[in-house]
Image 1 (cartoon, helix red, strand yellow):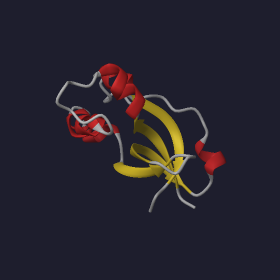
Image 2 (tube, one colour):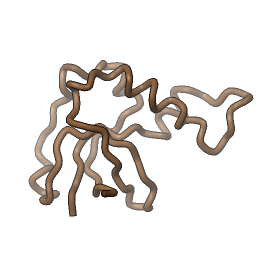
Image 3 (cartoon, rainbow, N blue to C red):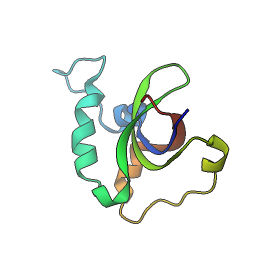
Image 4 (cartoon, rainbow, N blue to C red):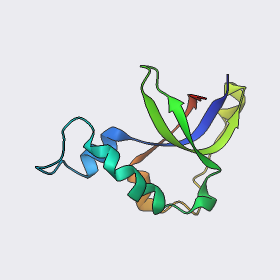
Amino acid sequence: MLYLKGYKLDRQKIRSRFPKEGSEAETSYELSYYIPIITHIPETAYKYVGCGVESDGHLNLVLVLEEGYDRTALEGVVTTPDAFPKASLNVLTLGIWPSNE
């Protein structure tokens, strides 16, 4: 199984940071913030955008820093690339997820 290590766009953090406006649908309004968030992070800060699977089966968007078939090898210390705008870390969560691919 391929694992992705990187920063997921954290739906709960996005909801907390950007409260729902009256006209937005309750169930998934935070998804509308994905593209604006990603476009403000330089592409040089991550390898690619991948799709990881949460333990509950939900999918998440991951800005992939590393990938591999050995989860333990990926668990080393990661420093945030300098190219990541510090404000973006307010809506991202570092972790390792199985790839959806």
